[in-house]
Image (cartoon, rainbow, N blue to C red; front, side, top):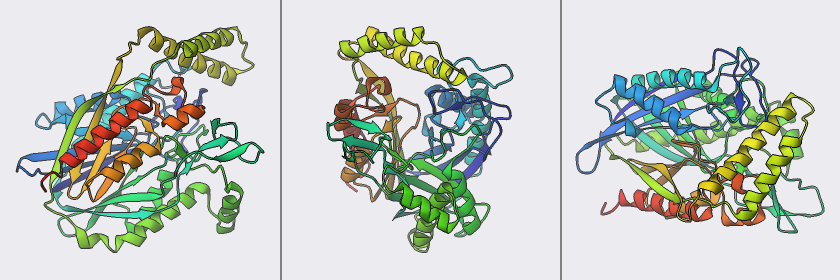
Length: 461
């Protein structure tokens, strides 16, 4: 194997609109920098042919397909011999990074960097990092490990009437239970240089980076503290590549035990983000001593890229009628302030998109999505472009033939939430049609195609 790393600062140099909420926030400085980290791995497939993967983790809410294509185009111009289909970007889902798609929010005020301007800024810097990672490849190896740290929690409260609500109240008489499972596992990959020196780590866990999701400053959220803590322990040169596993129904927020957790943090003297970093770093420490014993320097590198057509979630007549009524109501509303006005704008945009889908849809309408499956020795990495509910990821992991399976959501595009059938029945944000381009049926097709593609890389071996 040959392995190369690079990272770059993607913090905008001017104020910009922040993404992740239903109202406009113009950044007022930087709480902590946002970065993109690139890992280039080149090796040999089972048939002896060369193959590679270039993985880029970004401190963003998502990576629209047009943004990934801009990076690929810039890389292709500088590295004409590289198959840029093997470059894929994914997001950590911080809610305090720039918006990159025009139209969702009202037009930016004068002097504020537009989404298009930031996209150009981003693509140039990330393409440069990809080139540096590729050109910096050196002989090395990888090792894998699996541990635990409590970071993510299911964020959907279910009530005795069968309804659910994201971040719903639990201290009420009608509360029944938390809707779904939580996955506290951490999949880790360590990379090693030619003389056995640790060069970087990939950390994959089922939680978006959104502890402080309403800031008016740029922030990478808890992954910033994780990087600081791991570099303090393992050296300032360490590369840290975070990945968000399927976590559409997960977050670091507590629906239960929040008071107790806050008390323990206060007694320890740490913030919530620092506590998460401490837990992740302790999990790395716990397994690091085992990592050098299983380094693979010549394991297979196989990268499959394909397009999968998923049936879209069709908009019903009732849902379309509701969208029309909401648009009429919002158009008649007189917002009390700028925040209310921007929320009015965003909600109208969401309902108009529902109506556009309704007018264009056919019974067989499908959404093509880009799927990457990368075998790295005995481990595998597979992507999806959704905020994928945890259950779908567990279905894939349970049937994967790989010794370790790392799933990465919000990769190659941002296609909305993909909820389970039980979530759709219980309704609420994340499981209603305005939040979903694809429904549970399409989610199961994604599961089957991902499992089939993973296991094909292990057939006969």
